[in-house]
Image (cartoon, rainbow, N blue to C red; front, side, top):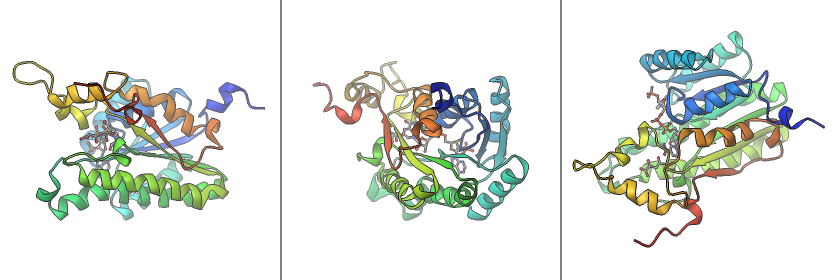
Length: 267
Ligand code: NAP
Ligand code: GCO
């Protein structure tokens, strides 16, 4: 029987977290490092990799950073091959990199729609396809897809994002179905509204100093009556990356302060 600490340990594991220069990905990487994992991350820009390496060093983490656009299959395959030859086989993949474009659907170009789907859905497919063969050879693997409330709900201006994140929920279930027999567990985390650069426009104080209307809306829709912090995702991510979740597969763990369960406070 593994001890409780052993079940949640990531000692000796190599974790690749895409888009982990800041925000949710960076917080997950910090937690994985604290649990013993070797941290590897990528973003699409050299300047964000360089800045992130400094931030990881300040946090006492010796991370490995790569510049790689997750939508570029050739670049992804080259990055994974470089990681495997220089660091080791990836045990844990977190498909975290993501973008959003908040545009009313009928005003959104097909090009913008495709760009969001490319990063938020096609890239997790490309990344997972690149790491699964070595996970099969190694006899185990963990894939964690960062989904969203929009894997379940829609709202104005996020049609591409909701379509992508809804698809990512089903990609998660399909990877679990197709590769579960190889001791690969694929699960999702569905963060609620988290205070990161991606949601900064929704929290921007008004010129008179009052709260943004969307900020007030989210507080009223969240039983916890607060925005989530990236740190709120750390425990759930370590759970899904560790042996403690070896019989959990194809699930989306919503870390949302209760939004999905709540009709909302009467105005
Ligand atoms: P964020 O602050 O905007 O960070 C996104 C990260 O993804 C950045 O490091 C960015 O790097 C990277 N990235 C974007 N496009 C990329 C590409 N093509 N190739 C490689 N890296 C790329 O986002 P976040 O709020 O931390 O969100 C992280 C994930 O959680 C996303 O999938 C998001 O959809 C999801 N999520 C967020 C919330 C929330 O409330 N914040 C809630 C639910 C789900 P560069 O700076 O180099 O572009
Ligand atoms: C929005 C927000 C959300 C969050 C997150 C919620 O514009 O509604 O950006 O989509 O990013 O995905 O889970």
